[in-house]
Amino acid sequence: MSVINNNFLLLERNYLFAEVARRVKEYGIRSSGKSVISLGIGDVTRPLPRCAVNAIEAAAAEMGRAETFRGYGPEQGYLFLRESIARYYSDRGVSLDIDEIFISDGAKSDLGNILDIFAKGITSLIPDPVYPVYVDTNIMAGNKVIYAEACEDNGFLPMPDYSVRADVIYLCSPNNPTGAVYNSAQLRAWVDYALSVGAIILFDAAYERFISGDLPHSIYEIDGAKECAIEFCSFSKTAGFTGTRCGWTVVPDALEKEGVKLNGLWLRRQCTKFNGVPYIVQRAAQAVIDGEGRKEIDVNIDYYRGNAEIISATLADAGVPHWGGKDSPYIWLKCGCDSWDYFERLLESAQVVGTPGSGFGKGGQGYFRLTAFSSRDNTSEACRRIKEFYASINSAYKR
Image (cartoon, rainbow, N blue to C red):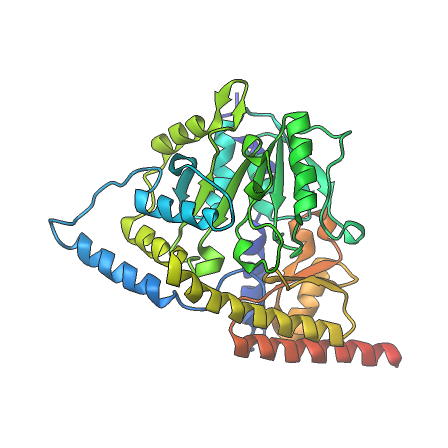
């Protein structure tokens, strides 16, 4: 009998972004320190909003006084933050009970940990290409993974196929890596499908704040979704919390399986395995999601939108097919060759780093992801280099 979890041996040796970092480091060594600009990993560059900094300082001062010091907090999160998140949803016409909201240290953790409340060996339906955490955590758990093809023909937004049966369905909107966003009718179709086949949707809404217009930010804007969906959201990209760490998960009270409320299972799991997010961080999160704080985070989001426009315009001028960048910080381009070969060529020729599409699944082969999370100066310089990169390719082709 094996002692280790042999499912880990089925994974790629390195996590996608660790492999990108390894190759960039190797290039730096052999290139004598050439200036490399990263539009690769989705890490933010704008500082925390001033309201968050003020809240952190005030909360830290509280922790330094005996009369206001706090030790262990509630595993589900402090009431003040859960109430603020409930108001955030209410502004979009979604009513949530406080006990349906669980504070986390970011969407990534809970997207993996949620599998604790499901049986081993379930079947998970996952879009391809998509954020690799979905696939990797299911492989770790020994689950069966089947794929929903996201391609140019469907706008990188796969739709339900009633001939396919799954226990769990992963949806990400805005999508990472393609930047595609589901509309209400499309989400309606997924909710109807999940209710029909008895599946549970795991809805990743980490980039919802980038959405403009009338597109849905939450799956709970669709009637019936509370009976079939769990939603994950994060302050990481919207408020610059990638290093501060805070997010939330919504497990509706109406969501049941085999006569058991999943809300109760998740609460039991969290009380056993999670000691909660620091009080200081939760105060910062409250500051950015309430009232004036939203205006501050939207300033940063508009900044990243501006970067996305610069990248999209550069690719358009070069005649490169691309998607995303409007309601998403990600730009998904067609590179027309092996994704990792393109990564190496762009790095060697232009000293620009992106993320190979094949790292997000087989369906990402031949595509490449760029992010809008760099500084304006670095984004502009990277785009200048990309323009020259394509000009040199076109020149060589004409010869």
